[in-house]
Image 1 (spheres, rainbow, N blue to C red):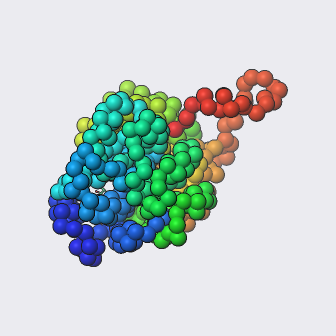
Image 2 (cartoon, rainbow, N blue to C red):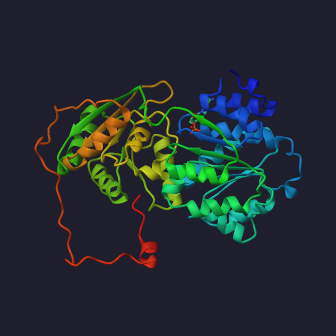
Image 3 (cartoon, rainbow, N blue to C red):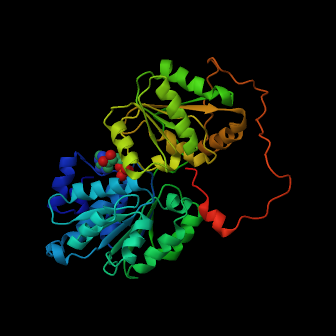
Length: 412
Ligand code: AMP
């Protein structure tokens, strides 16, 4: 199938050609016609499937006819809500790329950075807004962002949005838009809570599914190393020195603290490393990503949430320094490599207390991950998980109050 067969106008086709896309991906082929028909859509698709263009292209096509409105009089007609800033920036880039030969304007708004420049752009008039929930509501409250003319609302990475606790914000945003709007929901996984959200928002939606999350990428070789927890750093260094020397590598850790600790060790060992997690400022995160993307460093260490949805091309390998406790996360992680017909590698380090995670992962992907025993830090098969005794009062604490819950720091 060609993009022309999808009935996109010439200016969009020209931009697609220039981007080097020769034919639509599966998700684009399935989704674009429904969106053009004005249908609500619920799509389960991961990053890497071309899902951003699957909604950006038809949205631009639908808005195209109205593009001659003078800039000042522009009303925001499409709103894309994204859980993370990086993802919002990436979606914004897609819209800007494909609307290059039209008068349609897109802006991206997110927290953690000055609000004034965002207000200025909104006042000048835009057609498409890509936003993270908090700043979006903030700007609406300040009367700078009018949602009364929204024709299309996109909730991207809905599962992550809910995991990050944005459910109330998302529902509020939806209520602030006109009831007649078209709704599109994209999610990498479809847990019950996403289905619930979809039921409360979407009107007789078309369902689209590509690459079920349980199928791990075929062109990624997977290896499992059993290793005592205390030796993980040494094994990681051993892999970097020998097995994957000089390659482009994304290392996943479960916590921000773990990311920082590993970064220090690798830097002390002479490696060029960047790190990505939720405690870094927006500009630090963007710089880290750009430095890795431009190949100034070859190792990026990240938490799942910070790295989710980010499009990084040409990764040679993924290291699961800590194994994820959610099996689907493993599939997402290793799917970061082996893209676009290339071959990728994944290395997972498993300590005694993570063995149950391996069991769940293997059940999900229906594959026994090959184990590599030939390494300097083998784990005694009889080793038991290390249980840290809790310090502090022997008396059970009461449930936490609302105030202390709010103060709780995010771990991702
Ligand atoms: P996404 O899933 O939206 O993050 O897209 C993943 C990558 O695929 C991005 O680098 C896109 O630029 C690229 N891409 C999207 N659609 C196509 C297409 N039809 N042909 C080739 N590359 C594409």
